[in-house]
Length: 150
Image (tube, rainbow, N blue to C red; front, side):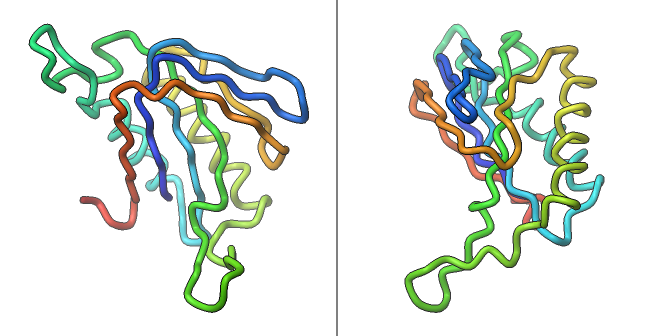
């Protein structure tokens, strides 16, 4: 499971032309699910994101986590995070989980984040054409991979 997390001042998403979510200060998560992913990947990744200290403290040092600032969360499905560009110029997405596997894990990720954060997680619509707008704060953008826990 891969996530691109971005510290944002604000973010919003339109799905099929309709505003389906917006947040203020917090984190935008672009989430890619691979064929080998399981619930253990969800738990590791969600816990890591919730506790990651990427927000500034009173000395402007990144010492605070999302949980410390009472920040909001937006979750967007992003199968293209598993693009393979080894051959040619057209990416292959064979490493991305098919919807019948990805949707339950995506929903579990959302539910698990809601449980540990006690917050409503704003989302787009899985598989829909989405337009995501954000004001990246910092900018701070971090890539996490549950199979490569660096």
